[in-house]
Image (tube, rainbow, N blue to C red; front, side, top):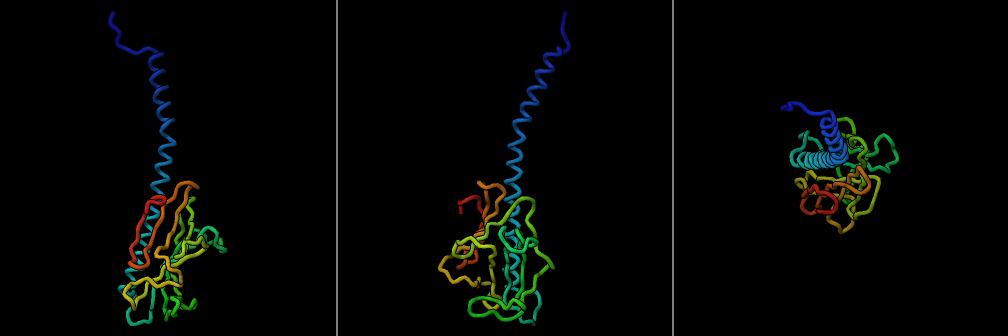
Length: 190
């Protein structure tokens, strides 16, 4: 007699193997999804920094006294809970002083609001001296054709914004002060 069908035991073993493989792959897919979310957020922030730099090369409002554009990062320890883990592009519609600071009354937020980080991603913000801080900003001067001007007076050449989803994994956006070069890298691979 020729057998043309599967037994119940054969079907149950096949289903068990499929369930086992699926259960093993779900955590790996979640880890991949978190990594992809961190990377896309880091690339979006890089894009925002480049946008501010481009504005400084060709200001939005010609004939006005716009002196700089800045990207301001609000870390997870920022006092105003509504602005924690967000960033915004600001325009200085006045003159900046010798320290690279704009009069706060002359700062205007472009696009009317801060952009929040997605989900549970948080900022670890570092200033030009690589000190942890609750806010940091990268200023691009209009008069100096997009050169970075900053209120930090340290010799360090880098500004780093770290994006954390879990405590052990992060992506960072690194801006080189001297050249304005912007890199996105995983962990400490920059």
